[in-house]
Amino acid sequence: QVQLVESGGGLVQAGGSLRLSCAASGRVFSINAMGWYRQAPGKQRELVAGITVDRRTNYAESVKGRFTISRDNAKNTVYLQMNSLKPEDTAVYYCNAHIYTSSYYSSDYWGQGTQVTVSS
Image 1 (cartoon, helix red, strand yellow):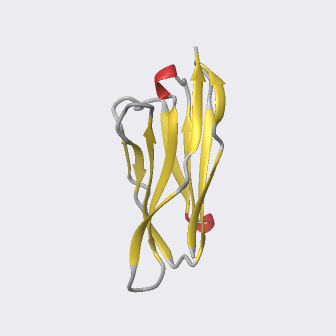
Image 2 (image 1 turned 90 degrees about the horizontal axis):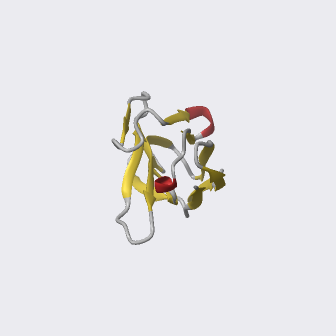
């Protein structure tokens, strides 16, 4: 019914950049907040960045000044621009969105994850 399709992950050298994209498709009535999470091996999943419908943002302290989250409401898409990447950024990145599938029902949805690997 509703799915989040992620793209943009890959292998990059330290100091490089990547841009992740996540597009919602299916029975989307509207989308509230969207965000990016990540989980590294042996570590807990953490919020990387979030963005509200009116484009207010918040970031994990570890990525402030390096990552930028944005959204295109017309395309139901959220982006994560990652600059000055560090090996410790290596993780599986998951997008999340709170989506209304009707005028009265909403729920959280998750993407399948995309691998980001930063080599030293």
